[in-house]
Image 1 (cartoon, helix red, strand yellow):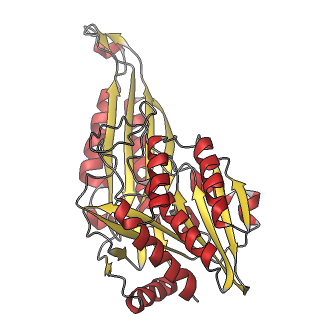
Image 2 (image 1 turned 90 degrees about the vertical axis):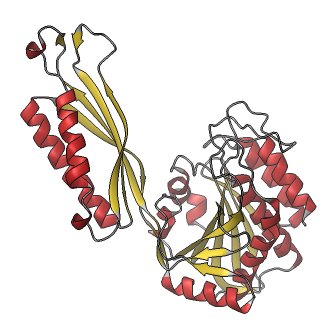
Image 3 (image 1 turned 135 degrees about the horizontal axis):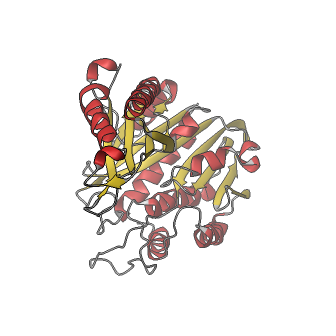
Length: 374
């Protein structure tokens, strides 16, 4: 066990920071990684870092990404002594563990530099809000690196511990949140005909989403919408409401299916609101493209794992959740995989804690990729 790495992971767990505010986390990583003698340390995306190790000979530049932000959830875990000291903020997704894995890799690289090219350890902020990857891609320091391949990973509670779950092609779904605001006209509840109640427009849309938008035969692959919030008027029994809000998430494995869903919803929304004589606005939020693994990298990583006796399992289906790492996949060849975390509480649970005993093996797997990727 890498006791120094684990102690540092516990320190991060105890001092979590929300997306875009990872200033102390950034400082702690810089101080900790100094002992592993990186060739260069670059700040990027505000609170992110790129730790660079140069190879002996020229070659490809490989980036390994870990996310560093925490969640706005109050931790409740009496089993650990390093619970969050920041009220309402906690590392309940394992980003502290992902960071520790890259630092364990840094320790290995400090003992034996890459033979060729460069290895960049990317500590990315703001994954939870979906903003971090785009911020990194737009950063001048990142674009100076001239990347060839980018690798990413996430721990998977409920999956066999220390097994690596891999997939060719689409690994995680595209998604988009929609916020629709309706503006009708209030009236006395005794005279609703004098107003314009948006509840009827929402009722039509809900049925459309259920019966039409979510019809499987409309799409090439899995695609569906989930209604997450509806608010109509106020709690006032004497008033027919004039305002309403509808929020939903569109989700699809294929980007073109997501576009098809969005276009179809917008058309129906416009049609219903015209019929009901209601004004509306629609805004998108938390947009993610699909995360698609590069087929050549899939074949290489599969071979490296088999040759090095690391256990892998090929996923038959893509995950329905989304990941902002997908933005990297739109510009570079990428490979993203899951790390089995064993029988522990699920991600974002109040008592979740990253399993320390998967750090060393995962870092070893990453090192094998460094030494053997072509």
